[in-house]
Image (cartoon, helix red, strand yellow):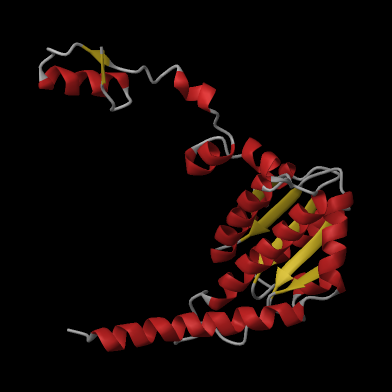
Length: 237
């Protein structure tokens, strides 16, 4: 059985490697990031984000974050795009392709098709010499020195860098749009966030009737009445 100390040491090492990579990410921000933000702000279309493999999963999360913070976005899987989903992209849309290497076969096939439509192409990649980087109008540099995986193979640190870059993009856009908590509530009517930001007492008061019992009512009936009235407080009359 592996000792607690060994397990915790491996976990800490992973977290520290990713922490260091994210710390370096801030130094990679340049004018291309600013131009990307302005391009999206000035666009009359949506943000289409595409990727393959683990980058596709990150792309999907970034889309969700953008949608919830005031920037309309759609996820388009790179493999599906070349088999019909390319029609997702409309004339005014801005396209972001995410790829660590920037040279995967699907991305290399997809890029010329995007360029043919004259859409602005933004590449989020860790390889500034890649096919994607050279074809993109702007580059979001997510370079990492090494994956947290001891074999330097499993996407770990690189996908964390992509995720953080996506968060940075979403929050900057949120700030510049003046997206308020009231705006946020419109997109989060359910769950704990929705209740905290959107739900009013009037919305639920009618469903919470105050139970009333007589002084001689048996205890089991009092408990049953409280449950049925959905409040949990008895009121004696």
